[in-house]
Image (cartoon, rainbow, N blue to C red; front, side, top):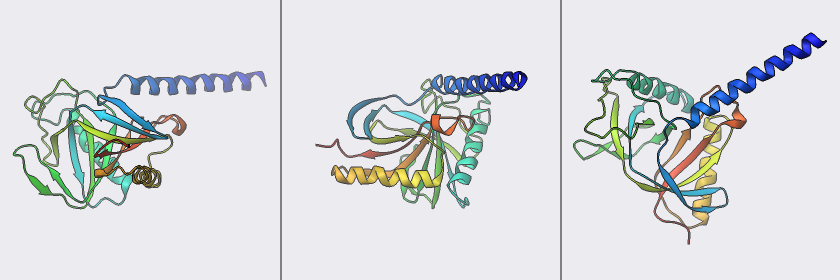
Length: 216
């Protein structure tokens, strides 16, 4: 019995160590800069600083998860060296995913283009890069785009990064904004900060959308 107890204790320590490592790894990654300017219940209003993203549009994916997985693979290849400089780019968080069925801005030249129905998946680029210095993707399905500073409403939650959770939290966010008479600008985005190895109850997930103003 004592051997069994010791074995379970060792397993417990290893699990805790793995969890601590996963949490530390996430905390050490660069994230978009923002400041919280207002909070109402579970909704946090943030003023984000401008930043760059590498982004890809997934068309014809079976579902939300499949789109996220394919988008992650394309973007991970880009930051791993599939770029014109053959440079490895530091990983950042979160992994962002947005349903795309409307016009989105291109970066060069500045124009509007109709995006087909699908999901846009994006990684933030480290702040050391500008549009001029960021390595360009060799995969034509990946692009680098500037995200301007913006006021954003955010609902944070734990658990798995699933389409059901996304739909539930998206509805809750939009309902809270409607109640506050705040108008969303564009599409709701989902964001995942933790790697899949992180236990669901410790994961940081968010749904967020740009808004026109703060609640009165």
